Image (cartoon, rainbow, N blue to C red; front, side, top):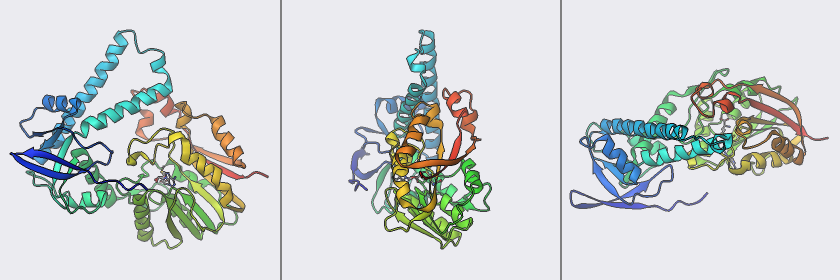
Amino acid sequence: MLAIEKQYVQWHENETLRNARWLSESNQVPPARIVLVDDNTTADEAYRWACEGTSMLWCGDFHNARQLLQAITRRIERTEQRKISKAAKSGQPTAESLVIPNLFHQQRQAQAQRSRVLSRLLLALDAGYVSTLRRAPDVSAACTAAFGELDEPCLISFRDVQGALGAAQWRAKGVPITGLDVSIFPHYGVFAPTRHEYVQLMLDAPLPAAHDVALDIGTGTGLLAIILAQRGVKQVIATDLNPRALTCAKENFTALELTAVQLQQADLFPTAAPLANLVVCNPPWLPAKPSSPLEYAVYDANSAMLRGFVQGAKQHLAEQGEVWLILSDLAEHLQLRTREDLLGWFAEAGLAVKYRLDTEPKHGRSQDKTDPLFAARSAEITSLWCLVAQA
Ligand SMILES: C[S@@+](CC[C@H](N)C(=O)[O-])C[C@H]1O[C@@H](n2cnc3c(N)ncnc32)[C@H](O)[C@@H]1O
């Protein structure tokens, strides 16, 4: 892991020079220009500043900041809509811009731009993430859980604080998992299993006759490891690169009193693990560069994790062992990867397909006909590929 250098920001407030640590979960650079804004600032002014690249430090009522952010969001959406209508009137969209992978990249760029603009509304928090704004809730516990202890003042986007508050709620409430009699408690920055279709695949796939040892690669909240332990696998070794995932998975294992599961921080496979009867993985499913650490669970540049997993899995298999790869084919519908690529990687790795279980998505996005990528999203199938060493 890279050590992240601390960054500080200075600004003037009532003729006093202030200095605070810069925190940005989406890796935004520290602001070059800061203006002070409050309840008297209009949404149009704020939107203009944000689009120009000026950051705004909120000094008004805490709850009004949320309303301002919503008003800026509406303006971004209107601008995006106007661009689409203008392109349509001028004879565009061109054939090129309608090609599915281009639409996907345009959507990603628009999301990144939206995130940059919305991240320009800032909060200054005292040490321990304390806000002194009018009607400010206690954000300290949620921010400490999300971003770690901090004993100095910080400057952070309102959006990141909202993210921490939302994550704290998920963590307290938990996500009940359909088909399993458990709730999973996701942490900030850890893939939350809100789409459960693949859980049923993990429950339906017949366990190999011997199932003493399993590896769960990229465990996230620990969900797949929990399913395997509940299905009777005696020892599960789970890995993840993301330290937040390891803390989260540990908490979930402890809450369920699972002693059969061990955790290791590792790039893919654990070190010094016994050969496994089962090696499972639900990798990030879209081959695109993650734009922030929060996206590492979904986007996998050049399918590096997927290919690394497929390439290395056989080495970790005991005799008669099986690999279970959970993978959505959305990347294929978006023309970012082909089925032939995937089958070619299996063959190169010396793996043969024993069987495949499929499921269709039920989440809202796959039903949204206004999404330009609806055709791809509604055709998505998630599969459990059972792979074995080629004879
Ligand atoms: C789609 S999430 C799946 C999480 C969990 N297995 C589940 O099904 O809910 C992918 C996970 O892989 C992890 N990951 C990504 N690259 C990795 C790597 N090279 N080695 C280990 N874990 C990785 C991410 O941090 C994330 O937790």
